[in-house]
Image (cartoon, rainbow, N blue to C red; front, side, top):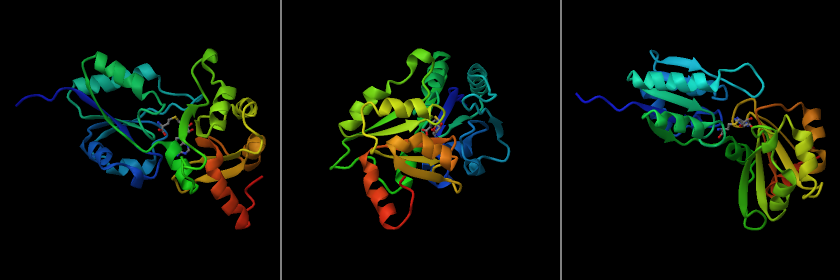
Length: 256
Ligand code: SAH
């Protein structure tokens, strides 16, 4: 019998709702003998794992005590080289933030094959859950997915530049933006009007999902007022106009 080439599957677990897993993801999870699981992976997703599978939680939320990245990479490689069927389960899509790219490079450098299974990224699920599209022929010709938490001080996002692009008709979808929301808001106001529609969606696709819809000028205050925390997506742009006016007409006083 020929031995399988050591392989790690980097699998997107989607935003949380297990119904949003792809069939490929379910197949990989079912076949896994070892699963390394991020903390943003919805608990319901693990119901597809074998009872005998070894499940290692390697959560590492920004700022919290966490499993060092080097340890995760070492463990994945060691298990794959032992012949285990390794699944690295990551929230959303494995290649949208969350270091999937770095993990793939590390594994490939060790001669380990990497199979990537896409997942529905949180930004997509968050905007869709509001009933808003990401693009719209009348006012949004594209989408920018941006992290509000870039590595190192020098790598901080230049919000006024992004605001200028958003003003051209690009929807802005911000991951990991809650912690630095004041500076993000200040920067965006240099290129966008205070009236620009904004929404914040926490726990998108899960039963405890919450959202707040407001205007850019009121963003940080609205997050504070509503007690919205991480994990959340901030969406900025006119694609929200349709849902915000519907909310107003229905007498839902969410628009600040
Ligand atoms: N690979 C993931 C993103 C990892 S970065 C993806 O494609 O979705 C982690 C950030 O994703 C969080 O800080 C938050 O901004 C966002 N996020 C992940 N799951 C979320 C959810 N269910 N609801 C809202 N935001 C979420």
